[in-house]
Length: 125
Image 1 (cartoon, rainbow, N blue to C red):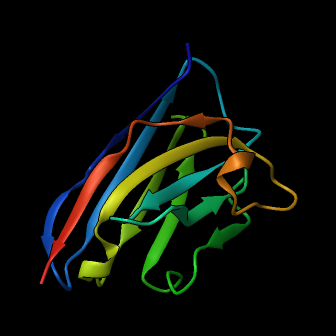
Image 2: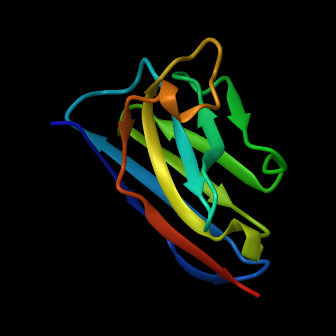
């Protein structure tokens, strides 16, 4: 049984930082893209960032590159999202995604086969 377990969400003040981690079990994703999506209140789920199997390519959602970084550790089957300069508009449930294509990296959720349960990130003003 494949599981993706997110951790690191919580409440942070505007301007602060958070690190989200996702640990996969049940299969390895070292040959697939992994990453993060989010769903803000009242909006559809959207791309945050995804990373190619070997880490040499990334794709970010609009206006997130520069504030957010993504990395992965294939030996540990994990993917990590570092979020800086957070603002209230970043408040969302953040979902780990895995099993996506590498070439090209895709921003649509339909391309990712496995999903975590989500972790809440709340940014206060």
